[in-house]
Length: 334
Image (cartoon, rainbow, N blue to C red; front, side, top):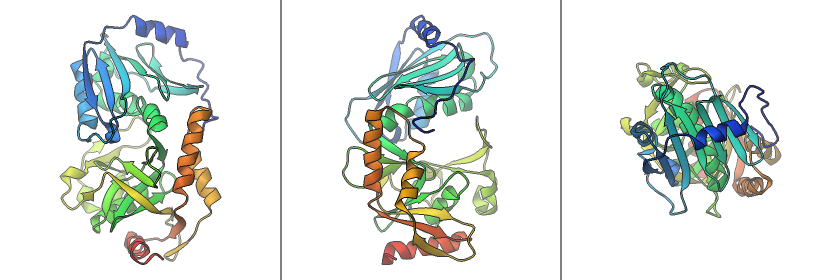
């Protein structure tokens, strides 16, 4: 979502209603520290189940920084219904991010230096995919992605210490190509989103190297995932989610210096690498950003730093061709 885009949602309760309900919510009696992408996040709640789900989502990450933690307060309220709450509606108002499913499932987050506060129902916790993919994925993300790092819609793989960022819109083939590279001996950093670190002056990105999320059709390319269980998605089609720890043939890295930014064009009759316009690359990277003027300045600077790498378009049809061409690029520089 662009910084200027605001989703108008007439049926969303007024913020005063959400805030008043949160003030009346149960007291927070327990807390846990987690490190999504290595960044510190303190979660306070009145529910052990919230902390358990946080541990399942982020417990595998090691701490990379000793900065002041992001904070998230999660109040769980009892409800009689066990039905999954409705889909959330989101919008931005200045430096406030709001997510509302209904009056019992609400999140507000002030960024970049504020706190995330949630009220969620016991019904939401009874549906882990719902709670995980809506509240847990989105709520700390606006804090992390303004304070510590700038998100880029791109996969990242590493060969011989040189990182390649694979860019493209949804469906461009980022996950398939990044996994094909990993099968061929590259290190896997991320399959869909990479993050430029604000704390470094180099072109360094990090990613969720613990998870590969395939579209179901990827089984036609990779027979080893054909029998994997489908994961429901709150939006879009179901996916196949595999932990890299369970795949002995996949080597991972928690981050990488970026030497090449490569945009994917997999519908070209011949394999080739050609220059790609930096202005086009800049527009692509900026279009998903949100935030205040202050945070946009920081993130735009991170993108400019990234674009000092060589920017190319990879034209191909088969994954084997693409992997071979990228290997030649990394090892020969052309």
